[in-house]
Length: 437
Image 1 (spheres, helix red, strand yellow):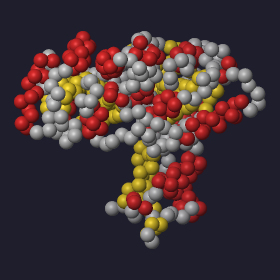
Image 2 (image 1 turned 120 degrees about the vertical axis):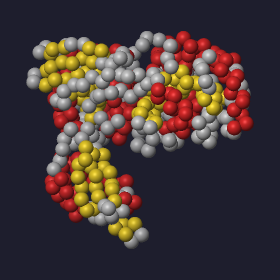
Image 3 (image 1 turned 30 degrees about the vertical axis):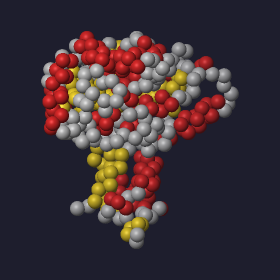
Image 4 (image 1 turned 90 degrees about the vertical axis):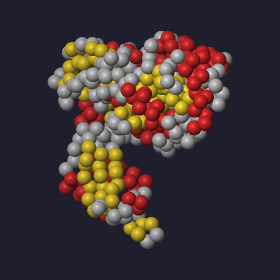
């Protein structure tokens, strides 16, 4: 599994970073997702250019808190350097080269990462003469662009993708279950990894996951083979990472991309934070199987209702993960640790499950008999046929007379019927409505 290359957009404030971010991503990414319970910072998105898929970071969305202006710019640039394969450095053609641009250039210089220089707000050809001053920043030819009008971005991206690394993907056997643990710092991910690997009858070997600094730990338990893709190995000690939790998201993304199953780890002592939802939202979006793991359960004073109440709280906050099983355990005392691997096995199987078309269509027909299809202005949705087109996650195409008639609520109803019939615990499922040609 390849990890996607990362491009970071860097520059001082008010040069138009977010506009360019939205242009490249091709949509306005709203700050609030339409999935209940997930608010999203516009800091990261996946994008593609020609045949290249990549992840894009908008450092403008990075809030460093009360740091002074230049310090904020410096920290944003350093985070981008830390995370990116290629950096797009944005400047403002109307204002010329400023001291803050020079500061950013100095930091980027030291990074030894490929930097592509863009001069934004060059909205007409007459302004092109003004870009020559930007050669002084020392990054070669500046690319004139206009974020507002979408001009020049093609040439800019052509240049950026030339610098993508040739990363070798590690190919594991089909049957190997790849999983990662994600969560905020201090939820106990590392101790949980150690606890899992420390189980007796486990054979462990550490190998570097990619040319980046993730660590893959393949191991065998019983008859099954697993790989833990460890994000803890990725965390650099540094003031920036400690001053803002947002980076746990960036760090988690790479691990999510390479995994089949994602363990969203919560800290029982601290309860649920907004950040937990954000991180979990990415796993759901990536279509990975998900298990919610409540760690440090040994430290909580309990009565016969404690677990049930905590579970209700999780379900309330993570409505978009209603399919994810919840496991309570303690990495330190290893209490209930044995319950985790069987759940990983189950959700991994469900994530790769295929359903016969004949059986699937029976379930859909029964669902329609129970709750007839909706009508809109006198026209009724007709469902002709359904078939599964992919696994990981299970993806179904339903052929209909008119896709406009397939309302979100009815699609959700069909998804729930399919879930009930085939026990898709732990995995998202995707339903695509297509017009029958």
